[in-house]
Amino acid sequence: MSGLADLPPLREVIARHGLSASKSLGQNFLLDGQLLDRIARVAGNLEAQRVYEVGPGPGGLTRALLRAGATVTAVERDRRCLPALAELTEASGNRLRVIEGDALEIDEQSEAGDGAHIVANLPYNVGTVLLVRWLESEAWPPWWASLSLMFQKEVAERIVAKPGTDAYGRLAVLAQWRAEASIALNVHRSAFVPPPKVMSAVVHLVPKAMPGGVDPAKLSALTGAAFGQRRKMLRQSLKSMAGALDALSTLGIAAERRPETLSVEEFVAVARALS
Ligand SMILES: C[S@@+](CC[C@H](N)C(=O)[O-])C[C@H]1O[C@@H](n2cnc3c(N)ncnc32)[C@H](O)[C@@H]1O
Image (cartoon, rainbow, N blue to C red; front, side, top):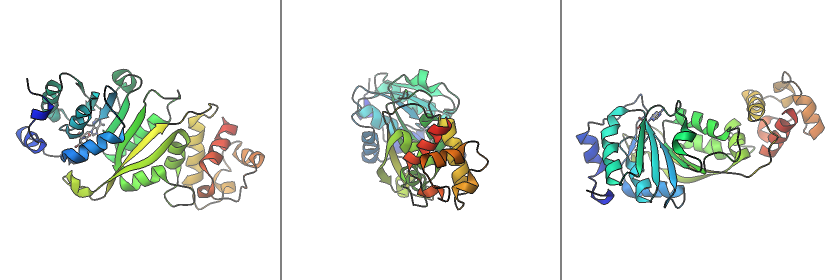
């Protein structure tokens, strides 16, 4: 039986299985083994850890995760990729289990198991929907141990943005409320086949230990209303949200401020008062 070291180069696998990249599935593949190892290391030491990978495609990142010693559950929508992934399952001595399906539909917690590290290189629209779902988990700490996710650079910058910047908005407040969020790695567009139009970056998020008492839906509604009219003062943008202006006044937050001047902690304090 062949092992991971004996696998043919990814380019060969892609050609043999006819895996031309599909635009509608947001497919841009990474083929450079060293870069893929660096991306896998963003998740930390994966020796004997469980990983949930979304969108393995032909399996470049999956190979790196397996090389790092992880046991991987992967969900892939494109059935054309399954034969190439089956070869990886065999070469890894069954440390890879592949589920054919849509990551937005499956019961990921029971498939991946509590404590799994989530790693994904996804089309950015699917990635942001999943990120918000993982961050808005009712149970906290959540079922996952960490998130290492590739985004287009502009989205990555919105996740880690600080108050007072143009990139600061709902995504920054939600992400930094519940996690330590950082850009771990920039990835040049030329690393992908085919190259996308924009640069990418891997964001690393680790859940924060935190007290409860804040309803994620309230924080989402609050930041949605405030940043939905980001040029307006809070007095205007929050006027139709029951209790919001009273909460601002109780907390000593001036209603004349604009949303990008509020810290994550101030948004969370208002959401707590509304929860
Ligand atoms: C950008 S490619 C990355 C492939 C591979 N991980 C790599 O780094 O080379 C995104 C992958 O996600 C898959 N994908 C897209 N939407 C998906 C979804 N909703 N559920 C599961 N997989 C999806 C695509 O088929 C594709 O294989």
